[in-house]
Image (cartoon, rainbow, N blue to C red):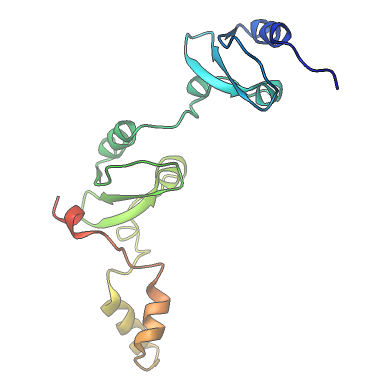
Length: 164
């Protein structure tokens, strides 16, 4: 395959109304700097550009800042207690309008509309609740079994966040 030149790549960006800002082009897998029609600046691999990807800010796919995430939680009546946002799959600690503490990913909160698991009736509050449910089903008390069953249910929120 013929190696692409910087000038060729610049022409391809220009056809879409984009300006190529990079002065060096290494290969189609290395990110290059650009400016879109709306004057947003970003980086993209030429391979992705060829596949139809464009400005992530215009597409609404640009990674959010913790401030943007916090603002959205507040608009929904929630208080975001986490101080760091890593990505859309990372868990964030929140307090719902009814005061329940929980963890949820940005992707689930924003894209799928999931909210407080306790309010939705999908999350037991504590180990005691689970023990009582086992008792109702006639399952004898076994701390190891209860622990195994609660690993994905218990909300492990650091004390310093609870005290916020």
